[in-house]
Structures are given as structure tokens and as C-alpha cells.
Image (cartoon, rainbow, N blue to C red):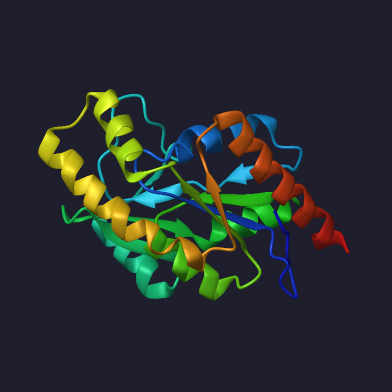
Length: 199
């Protein structure tokens, strides 16, 4: 694996990948095990909190009016209406500023559309696309969750195949066929980028 750097490194790590790629599990492992200090950027959303979710920890829960006002002011690095149900999600620039103040990397687990917006604003960001070994593996993983109808799973598979076509726009692609190996590959890349950020 060849590690290349942009002219200037931004300490922003973007992880994307389709449903079933295992990116959320990888994020949990990175937050606990990464040799480089990370802070997960808390997303903002207009959806209602679920039981046990904490404002400012799980999400920043905003009203539609608050979200729209922040969007108008340009407070978001990226934001979008998700799943066509009328709820918005986004990453506030203040979350990246907070990571900068703490001298840690901002970790954003976001979709492809959001990642492309971040790449534009932070051209020196480290972007990694997480893939399952095959399209069939996505289906197997989604079905094993037992949380969605076969119709919903088919929709997610269609979305996954579209997202996978965007993987080449990321600096690196990591295949999550073995969780330990995938985490090691990402931490190796991250450590090299951390060194470069001090160079």
C-alpha cells in the first residue's frame, strides 16, 4: 500500500462506506485503539431524539428552523436531507474547529455526498472509503441484522452499488474482509499522515 500526501495535510479524517461495510464498527475501534488522537465530530440533525440519546453527545438535536438558520449562515461543512423523509443531517464547522483547538484529528463518519463537500472545503483531508469484499456480502450482512424488510434491504443494496462507484474519489479504499486487518490498515495510514502533519 503506497501512502501519498497532499501539499498540506488537514487533520480531518473522513470515513465513508455503504450500509453493511462495517464502518461504524471500525469507527468504534479507531476511537478506542488509534495511536493518533481522534475526536468524533457530533452530527446535527432535525430528527427527534430516540430514547437514551443525549443532545450534544449522540447528536445536536435542532429544530428545522434552527437547522435552516445555521445552513443559511454557512455553519455546516456538509449537510443534506436524508432518506427523503424531511429530516436533515449535517456536520458543523465548529466541530472541526473544536478538534483543532484540542490538537486532535476530527473524525467524520459521513456519506459520499457529505464527503465530497468536505473534500472541497478541506482539500488536505484524509479520506477513506470502507468496502465489504463483495456486493453479495453487503446483502448477507444487512440480512443478518434482521432489522429491515427485504424491500428496504434491496434499496440499500442499490444505494451501496452507486456509492461504491464513488470510492475512487477517496484517497484510499480499505476492504473490510477482516476487521483487525482493516483497522490496522487505517491506523497505519493515519499514523503516517499524523507524522506528515508535523513535518
